[in-house]
Image (cartoon, rainbow, N blue to C red):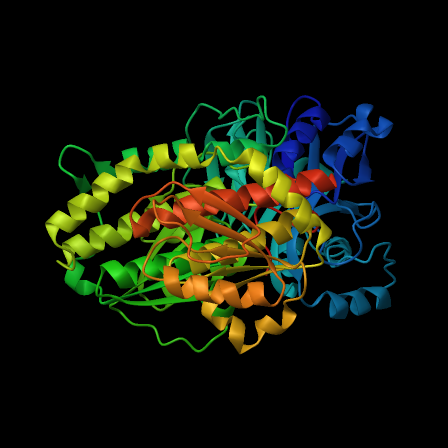
Length: 606
């Protein structure tokens, strides 16, 4: 998941590298480092922890050099400390790496036999010594080509050389990598986000390609080492400014931004005057699609599960969902009349991208639902549906989740209309309800005081459960995930009807259990399941929607009521208190809410 930056300039680069690394911390933040070349030497500085620790290092403050590479790390091989931090350097070569080298153990034994000595526990260090070894007999291009062929696994690489102080080499297989162009300087970066403050001209490397970045030009090479031409893409020239404002954390701000997230998505996709949905240039006819497969990881997988219920309810399509890391390793039977939809906030999720690549090789229909339209998944899909939720900094996704399920719901409605699975009057009613959703979310956000008090009980418990049926089940899973991500409390989401088939054994006196029971078709059944856990001593937090009818149960610990709308849209409102519960639980524990331990925003390794 790590982040890479490289700069080849005619002026000192260390301060710019530091600023770029700060932008890349969503990719990893357990250590950081940088290396420059100055006076014929590689200068390397690394620090454990955040980029601010690196910035405070006196060696960085005095670091000179007009060419350099930097890195923020999410640990895979070796402890998150300064020794294992990147860059890794020999006397002649310095490397930053995102990905995993699967044959690093074999390569390390070979290199030790050649007399190389290793300092770290990382897989990355084998790349340094392998290039150093190959440079004994080969030029830059041939040594890189030979090295890349020896590596098994995924990588994005930034490499500088003591004896070639005028160039940076970038290489990609699996993990994303981009080149940026500026006046009298050129750049290498994990993605356009890190480069956008410096340039709006970008080229993306494809799998197997590598490049040589000089100050005044860039050369691209195929896997075989043949020179190739690449397109230069022009991004929006205005850099998005995004800060916490008056909020303590980005996550708090992003939760409160959700009315605007939904409003932006609705404005983008809904034709208000004609009560229609604008999905332009859809490349297939409605009769060419008879089934849909939704693929994602983590929160994006929960979006897929939510959409499965909508597609089944609104359309006549056969619907399947899959976790990307499972999908890519199963024996799939691809069908030409299936639309494969890939959901990812970053658009760089490694497992999801690999599943997309598998579908592309099989020649089936592919669609991306992403937040970053310049991402690998967006570029390689046949059709893209952006979620338009803006930058999301908090590692635990909030507004991107609502953005994803909104676009998937809109897609379900549009396909239902095209296929004549829904009557126009019913369609119009759902569109009218959808237009009211931002205001309902805004009103539901006004629950802070009660949630803050309730969070104390969850912090004192050794575990908790989240239960729901039907449309509420995916939201129960997402609520449990948020609590785990932020407050490190064990939490599990279950279908409410499954409790009696095993999980009920975990219920004990005082255990907090969240029950999502909106007044929908599942309401009475869910209330019955709730009573089962109350009878075993659980402290039930009931989350339902406002109604004139009282809840038909006793002994409920606490109740939170969200606003009311049609059953399709209640999941949007039920999500809000669960996000706030996770946030306030973590806040009271004093944890780093925007950057929870062991996690990163963009998951670019398997």
